[in-house]
Structure formats: C-alpha cells, structure tokens
Amino acid sequence: MTSMSTVPQLAARMRAGESLITAWNGIPDPLLSGLLAREAFDTVTLDMQHGAHDIGSVAVGVQTIAAAGKPTIVRIPVGQFAIASRVLDLGASGVIAPMVNSKADAEAFASFMKFPPLGDRSWGPALTMSLMPNLTGPDYLAEGNRHHLSIAMIETKEALNALDDILAVPGIDAVFVGPSDLSIALSGGRNVDPTRKDVADALLHVAQRARAHAKFATCFAPRPEDVPQLVKDGYSLMAISTDFMQLRAGARASLAAAGRA
Ligand code: 3PY
Ligand code: MG
Image (cartoon, rainbow, N blue to C red; front, side, top):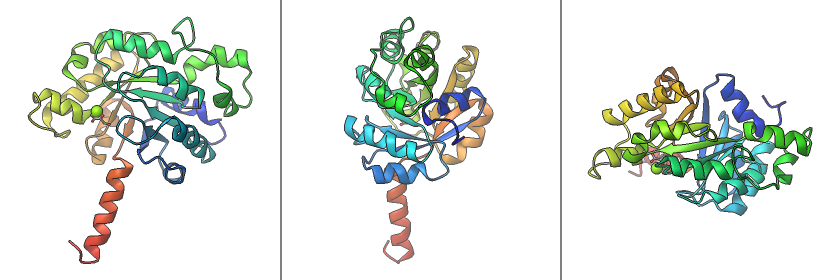
C-alpha cells in the first residue's frame, strides 16, 4: 500500500474490507512514532487524551509516520471537538473522539470533521494536501470527507443506549469501543476489567449494530490475542496495547531475565 499517498490509505483499506491494527503512541517523541510506524502496524494512533501528545507533537508525528508510508490516527481530548479540524489539517487520516455519549455529541464531532454540506469544517488543508501531492484544492473539497474517518468512542452506558442514534449521524464513519471505561460503567464503578463477559457481549452488539448501519466497528482490543475473534465479529480496526504498556512490559521482562524481580 505504500504507493498510495498516506492520508487516504486508512479509509481505502477499511472500505476494501481489510482489518487493520494500530499502534498506540502516547509518548510524544517523533523517534518513537517513527519506530512504531516501521513495525508491522497498519497505522499509528497519537493519543492526546491519556497520552502526552499536543498539537505540535501531532504535527511532527504525522510527518514522521508518513515518511514510513503509513497513515496516522489521532485521539483528541474529551469534548474538544474543534481540535478534530486542526489535526485533519495536519494530515490525520482518522480522528477518535472519546466519550461520545449522545446524538448531539456525535453531531458536534462530525461538524468539525466534514466539509459542507455534511459539516462545518473550515478550509485550511495545506499540510494534509502536501501528503496527497496529486490532489488539487477542488479535488480535496470533493473527496476529503471520504478520506478522513470520524470515529466516535462508545465507552459508557449512555453511549450504548444512544448507539443507533450515534451510528445514524451522516458524518460519523465508525464507532470505537473503549473496553476499560465501558467495564467501569457496566459495573457501576466497582471494577475495571476489559476482558469481562459483559464487555465481550457489548463488543459483539456494537459490531452488529455498526454493520446494520453500514458503518465501521473499531475498538481497543481487550487483549491482543482477542484480535482474530474481533475480526470474525466484523471489527475493521483494532488497537493492541500502548507504548507505555509495551515499554513497561519489555523493561520488566529484561529485568526479570537479569534476575531483578
Ligand atoms: C478504554 O478502554 O476506555 C479506552 O479508552 C481505550 O483506549
Ligand atoms: Mg476510555
């Protein structure tokens, strides 16, 4: 896929029926974003919600990931939907918005993701267009809404109750299950365990509803080994672990091998 310019790759491959795996980068260093992009991940997600990325590190991260021939996804902070337009201008192929709990949240998010008539995105895509060198301005206005995916997170009871309304918003392309927050919500705050049966049931339900609306189901996989089943259930994009978790697990494994418990 490296022959296709990087920005449209994500949506094009998902529309072609592929199931993709994203790296999850919360440490805002282009060396690390590039290192992850050169592994066998299909894309890298830069995390502005729980990770330490800001708008400057996202701008550099997108370019570094593009140099490895891969598209970038950005997770924005809770409720800050205006940042979605900014990260699209910087070249993000998809934007994940956390805690989208209602039709109104989904509409607000979509309005910053899509040019009219679908939304109210303002024009300023010089950087993102530099990653699609064969596209003219009028081409980008006509195609941009298809090239960038609006991905709404489903991770509360309210979101599950509003799932069909969220999926029906025209400018929403995908839903993304956050299994940890969902496990907290479904247990009434008593427990965090993304591998619980009620979370697995919710993951299957979300996949079925997304399919009914002809939208993409995506998620943070409860465990990396769940990916084959999630693909069978219809998931098009899955995150597997984070750089923080991978670094700590690697450090602990090396220390244990050296006899330091
Ligand atoms: C969750 O599991 O709550 C997430 O937000 C995953 O990133
Ligand atoms: Mg969450």
